[in-house]
Image (cartoon, rainbow, N blue to C red; front, side, top):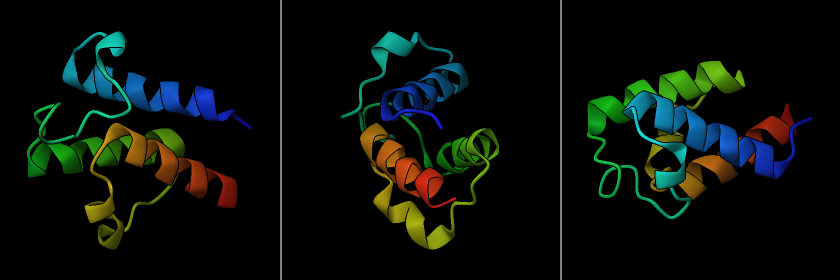
Length: 83
């Protein structure tokens, strides 16, 4: 099983690849919309990629709680641990 640090890096790496940015420019406190510039459509596209990468399903009801990179990481840590 991946460690929390590995998972956090995988989330940041997935974001960096999607946004075509250096992974070091993406911080856990970055807000997906305000800091990384994702709109509703790109947020959903990114979440599809994360679902595929981590083999989890993110229900629509959970989306409002995924505001920052750290939120996404913590959410995936909980989901991966449950699986």
